[in-house]
Length: 138
Image (cartoon, rainbow, N blue to C red; front, side, top):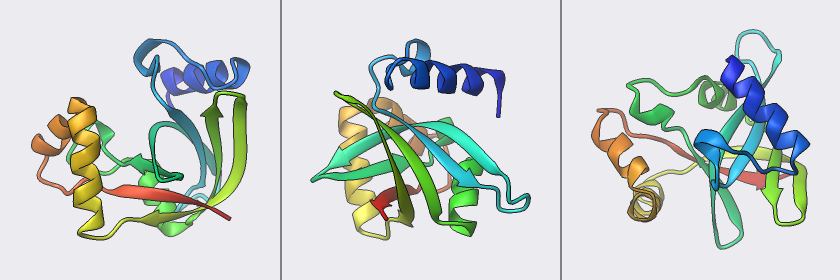
């Protein structure tokens, strides 16, 4: 975890899920995953999206050519804890990470990219297919 992530996590928890800086105004979740190799708990701040009551996260890593560590951890250990910012505070729940398969992934990515052009640009700048993961409440 980076110092920047540590600061975002602290601000999120101290301000009922609201943060400034890069994530200001974004729907943010904190994902607590279990390290694929270490078995240690890891917390990652990630933008989230909702559709029809389901919560999704995108493993974009800002368009890098590799997936983020939290995604690798989810594949190895799909049970995780989620802290979701809501209008009434932070909703904390256990979840199962379920990567979307095609064509659902492509359809949802297109919808999200149309509303959030940064995500469309991320997909264009990498050769990997950026995964979307549904966070299903346990």
